[in-house]
Image 1 (cartoon, protein in one colour):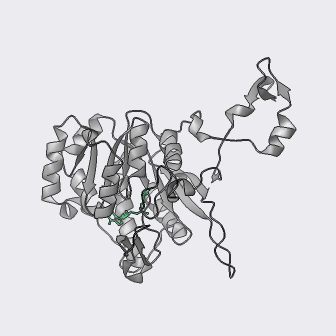
Image 2 (spheres, helix red, strand yellow; image 1 turned 60 degrees about the horizontal axis):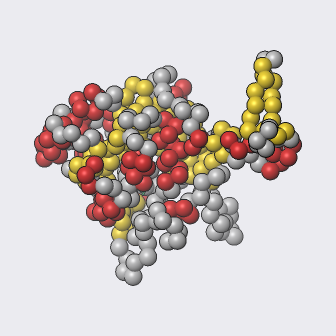
Amino acid sequence: MNLHWKNKPEKINSLSLSDKKIINELNIYSSHKIKNILIKSDNTVGISSLLNSKAMNKINDSGGIKLIYIDPPYFTEKSQLMKKTKEEIVAYEDIYNHSLEDYLNEIYIQIKLLHSLLSNDGSIYVHVDYRTSSYIRIILDEIFGYKNLRGYIIWNVDNGAKSKKFWSNQHNDILVYSKSDKFIFNSSSKLLKTKYSESSLKTHFRKKDSDGRTYRERKINSKSYKYYAEDGKLVGSVWNDIKSMEANSPLMKEYTTYPTQKPISLLSRIISASSQKGDFIMDTYCGSGTSLATATNLNRNWIGIDQSEKAIKITESRLNKNYYRIV
Ligand SMILES: C[S@@+](CC[C@H](N)C(=O)[O-])C[C@H]1O[C@@H](n2cnc3c(N)ncnc32)[C@H](O)[C@@H]1O
């Protein structure tokens, strides 16, 4: 079942959407030792140019792109302003002519191009909110196949309720799809663990080992397993333990003044779940560069794209110039 709207894009030709200058620069990158690339461009043009450049050979020789994370504008129909500035400085526009169709056109083309770029054993995470998640879910079903939905994550952003007139929205939706049946999921990563609740600790974790560590024992198929309280439990599809304030409070080290900046802990969980050290990850709406900085911390290679001058400047301030090329 597909979603239809007026002027839905039909054929997408990456060659006609690409830019010769960007292709030339990407061709130069392909013979360079450095793997990370930051592209300052409209993302449709950036990805199309990448697809038609020699850079793709270099990326594919390293195993291809295993993980795509995108956090596009949410169709707020507003200009998104930089924080903590005296005058109004626009970081990026999120208006789309006040037309949901225009917004979906961009997302549809983007996801189609990303699907062709992603490695066959790769995954995509699409971070949106209540305004558009239902539409984007159906677009992803069409392009990736509904059986390849691997997670529908509710991220509790943990802001106080703002409206007394109706229910305030306090969560974002992160839709996860794989390209095929084969995909990476590192369930044993510590970054996928969360604390047990007080009630669970009291009810189940009643034993202590000789080192004083609290644990519970469970029998599964007549085999006994030990679970230590300090290891935490594997998180499911509702993420309550990552606070948006980590990225949005001026008191926090990672705060950059870029609107809609996401926490490093959120990207750490996503990147460690769905890629391995040395893999390529990609973010075509990279904003302040959270995903790229996190990928660097976790020893992944990356490709980032954003068209906003402010975004690129802030992203650059978070990265070490010796480890990436800017196009
Ligand atoms: C929600 S923000 C991303 C925030 C980012 N995840 C972070 O942690 O800072 C969306 C970004 O998409 C960028 N953007 C919007 N449309 C774009 C387009 N067509 N091409 C490239 N970048 C685009 C905006 O400039 C903005 O930086």
